[in-house]
Length: 81
Image 1: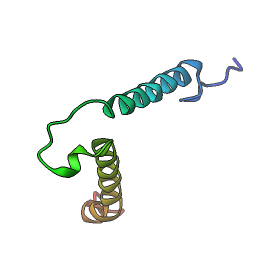
Image 2: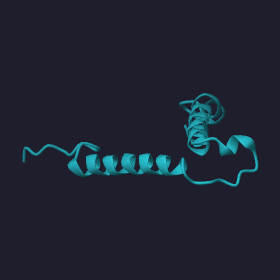
Image 3: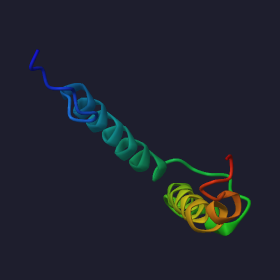
């Protein structure tokens, strides 16, 4: 009965999945350099524009949720009493 509880993200399967995920991301970034895009705006033709745009957008969403939206929806500790 002295079994250790599994730690999320520390198993061999999790490490393999992470390696496969990052390898796939790298392959897609390299492929993006060779695919012609029919862009509407000049900045869309830049290599890796959509990867950088998505990453920056994700950061902005997380930070706005943490510092702005949290203060709007946060309730007092005794709100439901």
